[in-house]
Image (cartoon, rainbow over all chains, first blue to last red; front, side, top):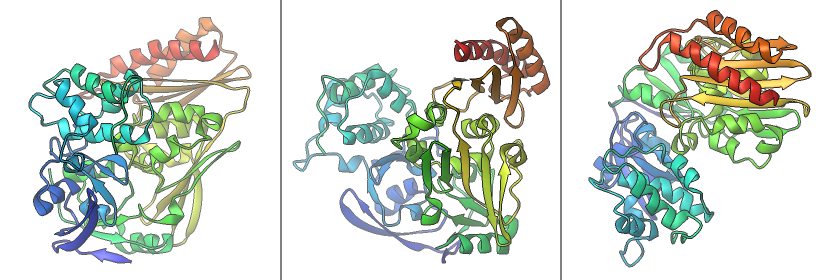
Length: 168
Length: 272
């Protein structure tokens, strides 16, 4: 049985946006804090820190998860994807990011990384989604600026019947 | 909003996990998906000194769905259950209820057994375990035991799970093909904890209604030969029997009114 003692930092290794990363974390360190403070990947935002707002959403092994409700050590060996990993190889916006840009789907931008990472799970399935399904998926992400309409419009531009599936 | 310090123990087998729980007693808490526990740790509502992380135990990853029902291991996530291709065929009521459990991000990590052990009075999985008459299997260093929902669910955030015991799986029986079912929930926001959640099963002249969010634990009531005219009285008696308490989300009076009104709609649509 592996034991990670409190008060000591232990090595954590995982794949972040396709690259191996390693850092050191106390057992109690949250994945969100590890990404921001140990790795310096500050694209993942931290809002409520108890799993309500969705700002800290990242993808773990292809699934959208709340990084504030995940311990850094629980990411050991996993594949983590964050907002920093969405751009195309040419450093352009991917389809979802471009749709957010074109539909004015952000104002202050604080919730945007979480929104995009939630929608990235939907995009990765290659399926078409109804507006109701998109709204249901986004119900776990709070935006206090936009009123959601533009966000849903942007999501539907990519994931809806007439949309294009985001490039993976 | 950071957890107090704790050590993480990562057992390789169920035996190691229960030995660890036996050794450390109330100092240790089990973590699988952590979607309830992590929030409590962050808010320091819980300050265990040891977390026993069972999320990677292959023996707890069980997921069997068939004509007999659903058997789910302690490390199996709600999303894994939800996406199982046979769930809609054999357990449509569970499938419907799972759409109300948190959000996709929490279902991707949260476990069914974790919901049962956390025992929030308004949570959907405990409600379904009670309504379907399911069981929970617990293991400790002295052996395993299987408890019925009514034995397991003892109250607000409380279960019959003893110190040193690990929940290893839960079983939700399927409904006979003649049964009809319905599910309704009222929450302030899609995916939030329910103010009141209700599951209804009608079969061969009996109506069974499970209610979550009013009492400290899910309440199940069964009626035989319930005529449409009898429904309001039956629900009124049930509402007063459960009582309910006021909290920041809703008053007890409002919860009882939801039982009467939403209960009526739910029973009618289940019977129709």
